[in-house]
Image (cartoon, rainbow, N blue to C red; front, side, top):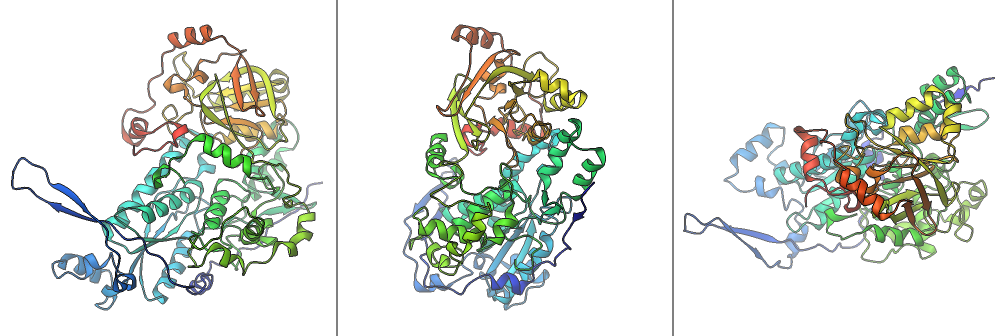
Length: 598
């Protein structure tokens, strides 16, 4: 008997008053970082270019501290800026408005994605809140890509590229328009990451020290059936594997697809968007409770910021972070459940009380309070222990796993490193023959054709996905080979849905979605397009993945590897013009964060 699906009714978009009410009053003076001043002087020699000299920053005066329109005044105060002022009057600003701070409200609104479709209304509420605070708000949009829609197609090649487009477009508008601050409203995965990146870049820039606040779009509500079973976007991805394996009927598959996304908001589990939103809230750059409150609930760091991080730094952090929350994709629960036990703030207070976070005076949040001061108003975690016993999360003394699920693996298959998502339930060791697919499409086709025969064929094998190509050479899923390092959520979901999670490990020089789970290793460097060892693997090669010792090796001699490498001819790039070609020519390896401005 098919269960009846219960979908909550839609909730209204938060009002300006609701958004404003989430911001506590100022709490003491803020420390302002002195700006750098750049002076350009032109030499009299015609052939000499302009010379740039940087003046030493001077301590800001009390008047400068109080001048909130420090940047916009560059275009609103000088009498010579008649054109600037004329345009601003043309968009509706009065003479009095020109003396007010101008705030850029950057939104990733577009109608074609559940994560983003409600951001236009949210940005309107934010703009009204800015107006009520005595400032002028100007909304502007940036681009967005729906990973869920493009997943499993070549459209996913544009996902990672959008990260740079978002950052560049916001930086362009903020710099050209001389806005005094930015309120960033992200939606889907890359939106959230890049709003943080542009925020930190603005704060740490030597030339533009602007205030940045991030207002997260918030998580989607769950759909559930009786007996209690959660439906979310990963349910939709996995139901195809369940269908082809005979676990569910076609009608049940359609029911999951129809009801997996009941409305607006980011994908509900601890996937990329919610993970990044929680991290942003933890470092104080977004409003408390914003990462865990559902979008339709009425209550509602790296090279780019001057830090030198390596893969080994992530391993060190991973070794110190216990795995406490039993959340999807590897667990059972979603962010709405975290909201029920006090949300991200309750977790932050618990971590602060146990010495795993610092809330000292220099750690100011966007509330103008320190993280520790914010936590004083959060519900103590000990009051939530009944929920802990329900299985949502574990106490520190009894974690699900003593270390994080992220593991950095090296070896002759990944000389420059790789990233594994291993929660422990998959085991810590996998060994088997390689089965190379020419693209994820061919792998899905193999599962669809005969899942039972496929299951027997791939028993304890390691699948290596490459892009389809016309030549006999392997083509990688990496930053240049993709291009854009596409995510492989579709094949991992099909594997898990078909019940092959114990039999198949999936290795790639591409990426995995935050929604992916199973024995998966991605970001393998160097990538196949650049002659990396993953491009030299052939069907039947034995591969060992040893997570405990952080190794991943193919059982081939150095001589055999050298011989294959000498014969290897990289395939031509997938693009020879346009944005994809520019990305190929500029992108750094995955081990360096796929940055494009070095």
